[in-house]
Length: 300
Image 1 (tube, one colour):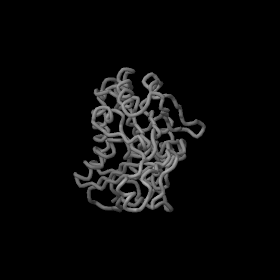
Image 2 (cartoon, rainbow, N blue to C red):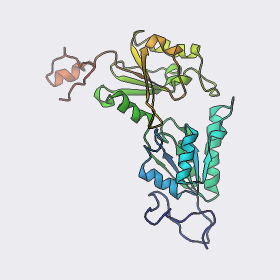
Image 3 (cartoon, rainbow, N blue to C red):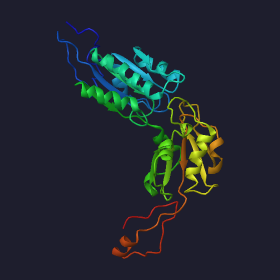
Image 4 (cartoon, one colour):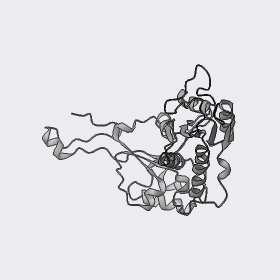
C-alpha cells in the first residue's frame, strides 16, 4: 500500500530525490514528515539552482514567501501544490506574529506526514526568521529538516555595485539594530545596512518607518561620517527586464529619500586602512604607510 499523501520518491525517473530527504518507499507505517527551506534567488526564474528545483518538484506541498505574486505563479509551474504565505500578513499585525504563523503553517503539514518545502525569495537563511524557526522546531520534534541556500540581495549587491567585500572589509547590520544598540563602526571598511525603510520602528507592525525615525539613523551615522559622505540606496532587480535601483546621495539627505522594506544602504569607506604598528615593527615594515581606500594592503 502506498502511503497516502506522498508523491513517488523521485518526481521523475531522471530526477533523484534531493540529498537530505529520505525515500521511505511503500509501507504501511505512518508517513514521516520532512521539511526543506529553499531559496528562490532574487530574479524570477534566473537564480533557482537545480538542487532547489529538485526539492520543489519532490514536495507534497510548497509554501511560498515571495516578493511578487508573479513569483508564486512561476513556482506553481514547477509544483502546482502551493500555498502562499503572504495572506498571513495583516495591517497592524506584528510581524513577529506573522512569522510565527508562517512557521506553524509549515510545521502542521510536516506533522501530518508530508514532504514540505518552504520557498523563500533570496536566501532562506538571510534576514528570514521563518525558515530558521521552522527548521529548528522541526528538528526538535524529531523530523528531518534542511536549508538549501539561494542567491541573496547581498550577492546581487556585490555584482551590481562592483566591490569586493574582502578588499578592505565589509560590515553588515540591520539598520534598527545599529540604532538601538552600541556598535562600533569601522569607517575604513564598507558598511551595509539592511531594512533601512524600517529603521527606528519598534512596533514591528508597520511597513515603513517615519521620516523622524529615519533621521535618528542618519544622526547616528553622522557621528562617524561627514554629512556629504556619499551613500547608495540599493534594491536588487527581481525581473530580467528590470534594472536594480542604485541611487547615490549625500548622507544628510537620506531620511527623506524614497525607501522600501527591501531597500539596503551601502556606505563606502570614509578613510584608508591604517597599519597596526606592532605588527609592522615585527615584520620590518614602514609604520608611516597606509592603504588607500581603493585598495587593500597586500599580505606580507
